[in-house]
Length: 274
Ligand SMILES: O=C(O)CCC(=O)C(=O)O
Image 1 (cartoon, rainbow, N blue to C red):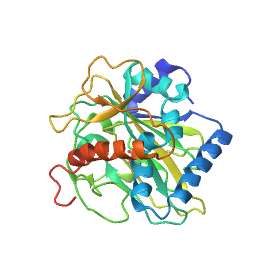
Image 2: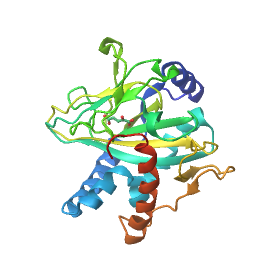
Image 3: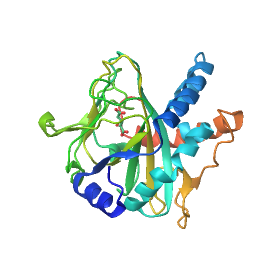
């Protein structure tokens, strides 16, 4: 665990990631997990709310917005990106116990419609992320290149377009990102990463928080909305979202629709299917 922030920033610059980092205790992680699972149970018969819950959790769940602002996380992100931080979204990546869902090798920034690379994902474990449960895998140093992707649209793939790198990855180069509940990794938007199915008896629950610098711009597509979580926005390149007022309130669900519409048009640009 790198508590020296300069050393953390250097390690991140070299490898394109840094882990493990501690955000919250195991008990706090269990508490957040219980809150998430209570919401999941409440919306289990409502497909639209179930989807929103996973994709833009920080816009509709007050306790997820709270996580995105935790100094234990943002101090480390700020060591890499600086003090003014926006969150583009915070999504749950959940693999049910003994489930086939996986994530192909990809680079995040490929389809996000941003014009820069100053983005960091903090991936927080709310259950054990192990090789058995399908933790993420990173290729050290791969963030220094930009490679083409192809779409697979495979049903079991957790990515929007089932996108994958159009180059082969030598699996022997990959590092397993095992995390205990309450720990998180940081990764660069160009680092090659993937994850395998969950063959454990517990759910694998991760919250991926996408931080960008406030000076980021969209690449010319529709304007986008983001949440200011630290410092100031001196640029005005994004519409600033209001923090959620509770748990999936009607006001926040209506706001989510507009935000999701903007992001979906960027994410599916050039895709054969939506
Ligand atoms: O949760 C996973 O297995 C993959 C997550 C991912 O691709 C990401 O956070 O960028």
